[in-house]
Amino acid sequence: MAATLGLIALGATSLDVAVERMGLGWQRLHNTVYVVSALALIHYLLSPGIFSDQYLTCGMFFWLMSWRLLARRRLGR
Image (tube, rainbow, N blue to C red; front, side):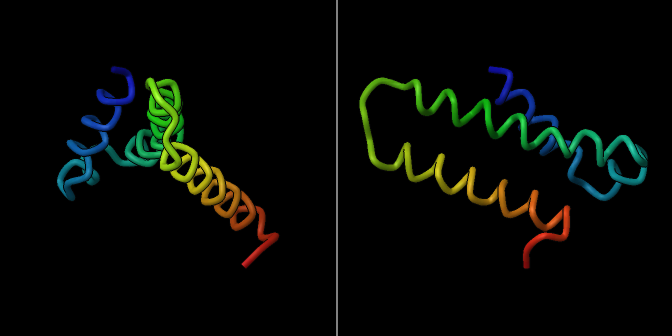
């Protein structure tokens, strides 16, 4: 439920008007997408049954987050 509420807040503040009104708070809110995505993936992994797409989705998320971390630290291309 926390992930769903977080995604609703992110979607509601994605409009240009909201970005202008929120100023720097917008970037802080939109950085929470990483936490919200991790919560959603944990929920997905804990769902009953074992499906290959659960692991594929989680693997892609962790690969992309690693890529972002390396890009921020200027260690990769």
